[in-house]
Image (tube, rainbow, N blue to C red):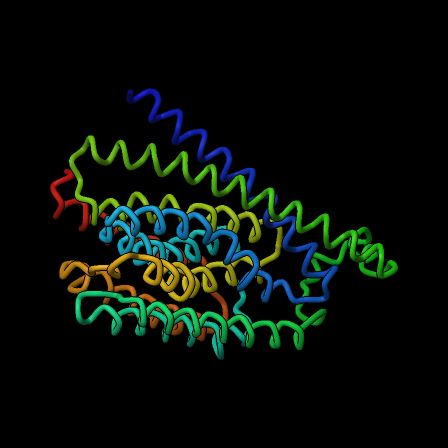
Length: 332
């Protein structure tokens, strides 16, 4: 049984690596062909695609009445996004932060985390709370699209402007439509690989965690959240290595916001009686999520660059948090 679990985890990681490569390649080409900034694509298209695992896991657990895993998945994934994904990407190369991130996207991310905290205050995230979050999602997409169109080609980094891509962008309308369609196919295939790889990884990891006797809440906050966030991690690191840093940091920020307004919003609407929120997560994990969002805003504004030591600090903070959870849960 343990051998099968190990194969599930390894197979999931392999699909995540392949899917991450396809998503980055498709998204960056799509940005240029559609004359949208890579930052906008990272904040919306890629973030929504890489949030699909969180959406799938949250749907399944909410319908089965496993609210601890549902809520823990969202909160844990957001902490992973804000600390580990940005921190790990910064270890490969310093991440410049565009003004739009600090002026619009991070404030929206902070507002979303506070909205989740307030919605959970009475112990239940209900259907009306979910509708409110979905309305925020629609407004966020609309404003992001307008900002993306305004920044347009000026926001495209030099690393993306290869002769091949410039030739594609300069061709006829029919050719450009064909390029866009092909990149959408590539992007979709990448997201499919991410989702299936994530499913294999999470199933194996959860089985292993249950063998160790860890609670569902801790499983959601650690194993499941880290597993469903691996697509964002792989995508962001791959984008950083390729020099497409607008996608890297945009994916982390956008995914954090969408985990709340899209994943949690839609899940709380379809859940038969809403999502019950554990007092334990209200006492520690959710306030930490808000603090991490505020810390991100401070670090992003400091020199408008996330340097390597700041990335290392973020990773150490996340490792300390997970270590505390596992120790208090009796895992070791």
